[in-house]
Each structure stands twice: as structure tokens, then as C-alpha cells.
Image (tube, rainbow over all chains, first blue to last red):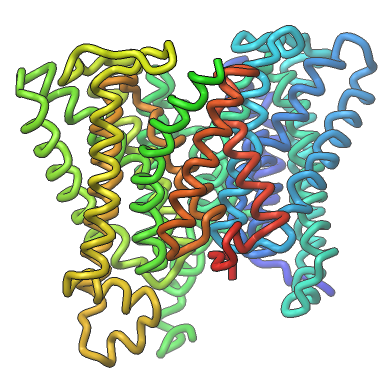
Length: 299
Length: 285
């Protein structure tokens, strides 16, 4: 099925090319580092959306997938070639997709949400307890095989791959709608987890560290917040929500508490006032522009 | 060791019973899964800390003020945030999660992440089977039993209690009978918040109060409701004690850090293997 090329897609493509060319003008390592982080969160949020948006169920524990990818990097980074580390991160996440996905197959609504919520929390407790292996609260130091710029491009490339794969799935989602196949649901778990796991490897390289806070409640919730604020079920929306909130959060970086406070306030406002998120505002904006022409408006 | 597990398991079983009853009340009656439930426990704990340590209030009035103020807050939360989103279970879930995170961070700003200690109302302790039990813990069990009994009597005998049960069984029929469903929902929210607050204010003196303390009671209450089934008082009580003993076994035999993890594992196992709970009348449709 052909996708109609909307102005917004052209806009996104231009923005993306701008991001690719950006290091030619700006070499400030801080800016590059923030943009890398934004791209990584965009990967997590859009891979969250592959799962949550398409099956219409809120996954409250996406951190489990990129968290195990990050820990795989911590364990295997010193011993393997980076490409194998990437593969291992993706495969570990896929393994966990089955572990989490199979119990979730029959669950819906809040049951699915709370079941997914507790998986990363269990791993967090285990990481604290088995400190000989995981380094406890100090975690594991990771050395990156890539330069800052290299990591930036790797993150952009993975983001592009995630977005393309996700919109490719759109048609499949449409076909599966109403059929409610177990395979489709598990497939969404595996696909979402795989991209998150790959992102987790880059995340560990970016932070040069992996620790139990990766599995914390707030890490999982921040992905949900990005997804909801961006617009759940739209793939691009969560990616944009992730960029928006990461940049907003970074401007308030001095105090972590303020960042969390702002995230939760934005979430509450969004759910109350704009349930379709930032991506939904796009439609509202279009409706506003076209209003003088088409009387009656949408619906 | 065995004595520790039995005694502390019993104390926590009593606290968990209150927590689970409050959680199941709002969920059973109004189908609201309130993720800010644990935050109410948190608010009550900090209120009692402020009242007792800050204002030097006596323990008993402080306890009543903390619970009453938290109830008002629950009422406000319902009116402002939950009521407009009532028709969407998913949006209620998200907004209450947002509120829980927000309140946690407000607590960080107001009190820092440093754990706080609430002075015990009744000092002193005694020993059963060589395990030291404080009078505060004994009072907690007694209050828990009184609350469970009072809740049972309220649901069975009072007019509002009967309306609550009618709405829980069949909302449409209850509305046709002239029951104001909205008023019942609000009452359920207030009583539910009150039970979370009562538990929070009861345990504050023998735990430390810290901003992240609200999540574990929420997840424990959810686990118990899943395990015990909805609308069964005995199911809830038995499930609460199963979870409490399982936690104490893990804490004493393996590691205190894994205490929560075993509850989470029980939740996953129940939903996977026995989604209707131990006693049939499950909550998973």
C-alpha cells in the first residue's frame, strides 16, 4: 500500500537531513551529546509505540528491553566486537520480549500495564542484590568504541530504521485489527523490544555506564510520558514527544527533581486537555488553517 | 528466624489487608484503577511526620488530622482529574500515574530524599517467642482489625454501604433504583483514600518516611486483589497474609532487597496461571 506524502512527512525529512548535516556547523560536544540522547529516547518512544500504539495497550515497563540491552553492553562490551555487542543487545531484548510477552498475551488494560510495570522493577531489585555480577548501585562502566559524532550518527541511523520499520508495520496493524491474533501481539512485543534493545546498547555507549536506575520506575514512565505527550499510536508522535521532552528536560537539567516534576505536569495536562498529544495538535492546526475553506470542518 | 517470619508476617498481613481493601473498594465499585493510591499513603505519612515532628502534636489527633486531610485530597483528585476522564480506563490509569509521580517529586522538594523518622506514639516493647514487638506494632494490628470489622459492618448495615455494594454488582440497575451513582463513586474514593491514609499513618512510626515509599503499597494492593479476587472479604484477607508471609520469608531467608520482587513475581504468576485469582471470583474479564 502506498503512503500518501503529506507536507508533514516532507517537513520531517527536511528536519532529519538538517540533523544529519548539523555537525558540519555545530561541533559543540554538549549539543551533539544532547541531540544523541534525544535520538535515543526517540528510538525508545517509537519502539514503545510499536507495541503500545498498535495493540492499543499501555506498556508501563519498556525500560526492561533497553535496560537489558544496556546491561548486555556492560557485560559483553570488553570481550566482543561492537557489532556483536549490538546483536547481543538486540537478542537479549528479544528474549525478554518472550518472557514479558507470553504472560501478557491474555491480559488487557490495567492488568497488562501493571504486569509490564513490574518486570523492570524485578530486574532493578536483582541488580541491587547480586552486586558481584552487576556492580550493585554503582553499575558497570562502559567504554565506547565510537566517537561522540560516530555515536550521534549511529543513533540517527537506528532511529530512522525504527521509524521505517514501524510505519511498515502500519498496514499489518490495519490487517490484524479485529482479528486479534496472538501472533500479532507477540510480534509487536518482539519488534518493539528488538529496536529498544539495539537502542539500549547505544544508550550504554552514550552514558559510558549502565546501572540499576535504567530499570527504575521513572525510566519506564518517562517513555510512556513521551509516547502519550507525542501522540500514542502515531509512531512519529512519540519520537517527537521524546525530542521535545528531552530538550525541555535538558534545559532544566540542574535539578533532576524539576525535570521529573515538569514531565509529570506535562503528562497530566496532556491527558486532560490534548489526549491525542502533539501529533494530534497537528491535525487541529490543519483544521484551523483549512477552516475558512471547508465549512463544517472535520468529522 | 521462624518466629520473626511469623510475627512480622502477621503485622504486615494486617497492614496489607487494609491497603488491599481500600484498593479493591474503588476498583470494585467504580472500576477506577487508581495508580495514585500509594501516593495517598505517602501523603498521610508525610502529614503525620509534619504534624508530630513539626507541630509537636500528640499522636492520636495527628493521626485523625492526617487521615482526614488526605481524604479531602482524594476527593479533590477525584473531582478534578478522575471524574472528567471516567469513561476511559486507560486515561484514568495515565493521569493517576502522573499524579503519583508529581506528588512524589513534591515530597522530594518539600522534604528532600532524606528519610524521615516519625516518633512512635506509644513507646516500649515486649517479647513473643524471643522476638521484640513494639507496642506501636501491636496497636497497628488492633487498629487494622477494628478497621476491617468497621468496614464490614458499614458495607452490610449502613444505607451508603448497601448502595456501594449495589453499584458494585450492577451499576445500571442501581441507577434505575434511584441510587445516585456519582455520589457512590465519590464516597468509594473517599473511603478508599481513607484506608490508604490510615495504613500510611499507622506504619510511619515504625518505618522511615521517604518520597518513593508509595509505589510498593500500590503494587502490593494490586497483587492482593488479583490473588484474592474482587468483592470477597475473606479472599482479600487470605491473599494479604499470603503476600505478607511470602515477603517475610524472602526478606529473612534470601535478602531484604528482594522483598518487593517476590510480590511482583506473585502478581505475574497469578495473572498468567490463575487469572481469576485463588477464589474464583476474579477481576480479570
